[in-house]
Length: 459
Length: 131
Image (cartoon, rainbow over all chains, first blue to last red; front, side, top):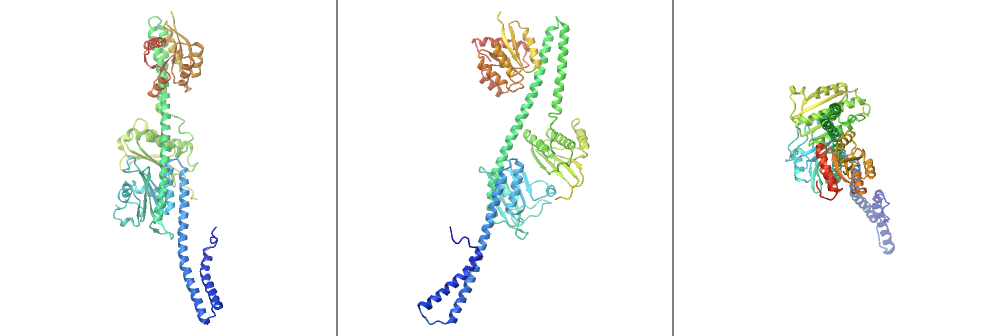
């Protein structure tokens, strides 16, 4: 083991001064012993002091360099440790939405950035399908409106697939500026997320926070670390996507089986009734009374079938919403929708304190959501549905917005039979109210607002 | 006259009752057993050694295909006729692999069912195969 290692930099610093001086003293002594020269004391003292000063300056200079390098190495080491932690954190998560949020939160931490965002590309790689942010409050997000479509600097990242590092966004010629209500941003660092050679998304951070708390630009080291992280992120995202596909398949299979069981039962019943009538048919000439009995049985049987079918249409799984918490229930609805349609379904949900809503309220809210989603599926001709569950200071708000053809006011209240009055009833039963607005660019937004006692001061 | 022994296996009560009633009116068909589950089917077929097993493999216990497999193994002379609400391609392939050559959907007219049972009985004697 290297005998010099246990010595701290401080000790080395002093040694750098003392050793040359001592050595010179030794040389002095040796000279006077072996060479018996005529020496002047002043000359020797002067030489000694000169060496002392020179050594001190040298020590100061060289150890300053060592200090800086050590500092860099330490920082580097810390970043790698963070990177390692981040990678581990990612591997524990299978839920795609959670993984995506974690990716962008961790990336922000790694590079000490104020804002972060992750864009997941559509499978054709042309535009951003999902957009997850970190460091922006929900209000800011809502005020900003639609997520970026991949123009300007972001577009460069998407299309060129190479990392991008800009000190001042405003003065970069490729920038197309910010949309209204966008918080101002200065420095930018973006890296593509690649899986199997294909760009599946891009991760970008803005406004690195320097050691004194002000905004600075990102360093080459930040870029390197973020690129390494992007590799981890790619694996985690792919994993989560595969897992979700697997779950969707399972849901589909279950529904298919369930549908088949149900249809099977109904067909059986109708077949049996057919046989009964066939039997009655042959009895009519000889034994009309028993024929009548058979026909009667057939009628009863048909009524049973009608009841079965009606139950199926109205309320597929009546126990469905019991005992669910609101967020989980919405996730399930979103998952079902994704599994059974081509709709792009986005769900964001604030955490809701466990006993804030009664189970009855939760069930009513989920029913309203289900009804609304069913309407979107059937009538809206939308391509995207966004569900947002927001915990405001004095209310819980559920917003469901689609980008379809919208409903004009006149038709709104006459929507599909009992659909709309039912929803209003349920909203009222939950102690809230229902409102409809036109959507962001097209389509409809449904807002269910349930007032709650004001939030206690947050911890 | 030689009557064709048949076991009816279906877990739906009304279907079982009605098919029994209908087929009983055929002079040359003899219903020797009724089964309402996969296990009951195998037991019944082992006990009665019918020529034809008229079965709906969509049993509530989910073991219908298994029952067919066991019957084919234990009573190979019995011809299986599947009468079911619907079959998809995957199921047809499965049944084909098990050596089932007669598959019909419920909704078939009864006289057609009787004809099919006759066909199945004759094919069992090695005269010809038909689907």
